[in-house]
Length: 450
Ligand SMILES: Cc1cc2nc3c(=O)[nH]c(=O)nc-3n(C[C@H](O)[C@H](O)[C@H](O)COP(=O)(O)OP(=O)(O)OC[C@H]3O[C@@H](n4cnc5c(N)ncnc54)[C@H](O)[C@@H]3O)c2cc1C
Image 1 (cartoon, rainbow, N blue to C red):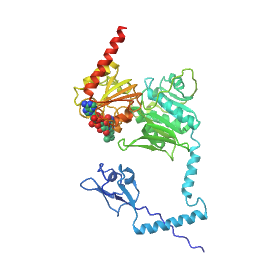
Image 2 (cartoon, rainbow, N blue to C red):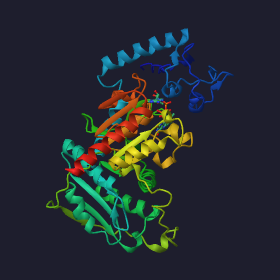
Image 3 (tube, helix red, strand yellow):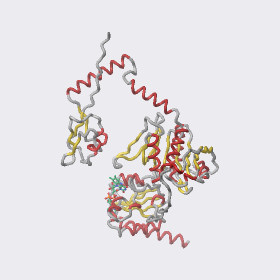
Image 4 (cartoon, rainbow, N blue to C red):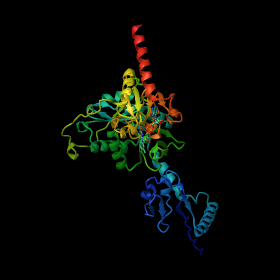
């Protein structure tokens, strides 16, 4: 009888710190270490207990400065050689056998994915008024559906919202899935996520895009959880790879890197995208499409949350909508005080725009949070963005770099803001901003006299 060969396991090694590279980022590695093999020392550097380390490499993946590496003990190195040899022998005996499990998993997944087709965009509406981000997503979805050669569909849920189907066609959808019933009159998580899950299970889309608004974030999370699929929040780029998978790019590690995320094993692939990140496509009201009406069995008495009163706070404390402005004059730490923002307001008034700010200015108490532009503030896409006394940290840039024209005023000619600016003025903003405002006033007066 043939002797059964002992299975050699691949050794995984241990993690260790590369001296002097750690920046004491705040114990990301310790937090990520599931077997609790890492504790931080007094200066915030990791101490790794090799008895507990399983070689999972999670700590390496979260380290923002690559300050951790894997190493093998001499015994493990020997075991690694044996494993490599055994793998080669197995591969020679039966091509594909060495990777047998992976091949099998991938084939199964590919077959399962074949059932899923089409790009869907969820059309967010409140009282029948659509959120513009939905139309922006139809623009992004059109590129994806074209690359994949599949349909671009809109999902519309509400009560008395049928006219939105035509608007969705005008922005590029070729089909809409409409669920229109009194129970969907106001947004509530439960009926809405159940309605979408009903559609997904029946029609099987491969991609679903949702606006990263308050409502969209709530809904997308609930849908992804119920479908047990992947969801990437706040994407700034969407593309298709050569296998037809969705490439979802978003800032990671506090905006210091851009990560591209894939949903490799489940469908649909779900992403949320903030307003103004994608370009609004041209509207063509002559376009038409197919409306699929669905009536999932969702009854009012089955829903735990009841709508007692609707309080409109859209105007409360937020008379300026930075995200929707066509001209933004933004100030940063270089403004030096709250009082000094008056010169930016004067320039914004001349240009018919609004005043925005960097996070530093918000943290200093010079501007309210709703004016903050950037990763943890608003994403803006105005026709003109004037950055005054803003250095151009990546977290600020991700919120404004898609503006049509960027003008930077900064006394430091090395400031990173100049890398994204179309026009740059190196100098003291306290001299430049009032001079520009005066010049615009002069030109306006001249024009009016003509
Ligand atoms: C997780 C995370 C999220 C963040 N989110 C955001 C975000 O959403 N938005 C955001 O803005 N930041 C955000 N930040 C903060 C960001 O990293 C920067 O700290 C911030 O943007 C810096 O703001 P600032 O450019 O105003 O200040 P600074 O970087 O201090 O720059 C001030 C600039 O003013 C110039 N200056 C000074 N005086 C004058 C003068 N008289 N004339 C001309 N120029 C002058 C200086 O040369 C300098 O370039 C985030 C950070 C983290 C970690």
